[in-house]
Amino acid sequence: MSQGHRPDRVGDQLRAEMSELLAREVHDPGIGFVTITAVRVTADLQLARVYYSTLGDEAARRQTGRALGRAAPFLRRQIGRRLRLKRVPELQFVYDESLVQQDRIERLLNEIHAAETSRPNPPTDDDEDTGRD
Image (cartoon, rainbow, N blue to C red; front, side):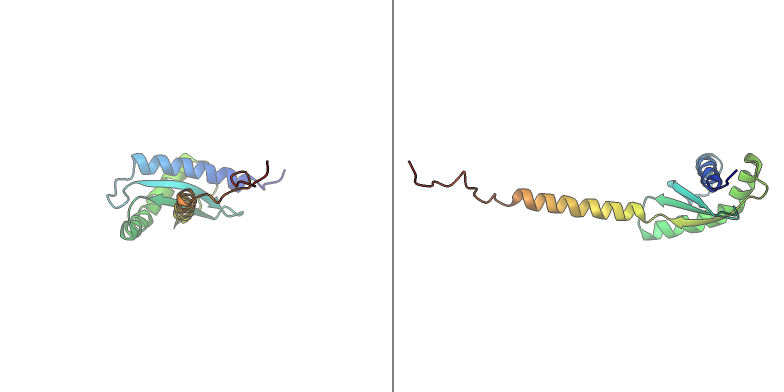
């Protein structure tokens, strides 16, 4: 049986467990409001890159990253107790830039749409009088 999808399944389990742990068990005030957007696990299940997003500016984002780094050993132990894995992967936290990029693209599209709607429409052939009877 192929193990090609196992890292994806383990990543989904890790994301669900970590979201619950961060919401209920981790009491570090530096973490704030965090959303785990995805977990990518290597094929050998040794490393898990945990993608997260958070509210706030760059300073709040750095503070949240440091707090998640401090919480990583606790999270890893708790995940080891909850999931039946031979070896619990190392947790590496990575800020998810895709939401920032998505927001930027949406703003640009809205600006383009606003510019197009404020521009007067050019006359069409139907609007012009051809002078024929």
